[in-house]
Length: 140
Image 1 (tube, one colour):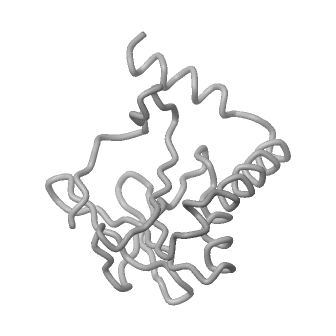
Image 2 (image 1 turned 180 degrees about the horizontal axis):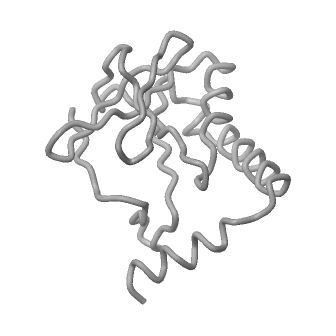
């Protein structure tokens, strides 16, 4: 099965009712925050979710409540990505792909990120992500 077919099928499965979606997302956050990876992490990276994706705002809120630092990506030319702190001072702008990216905040190199949460449309059994757009190289 090709990537377009897999992506299409999984996107169809993701169209569940709002109430069910919120319940499933809350259950995922509960499972995540119970892991040792979460409990030992001080700096957590995640994406700014789009409408049809797993909503990452509850993950960010759980991290802030636990006094953790949240960092989110900003993309650059040549498919590069850097992570910046996300807090109440963070301002965002929308990219041409409709993704919200920070325009201010402290830069965190990847060697300072303890846990990275990467939502995707689907994953292979080997953990490879099938997302919405092209791959990016993370800049250290």
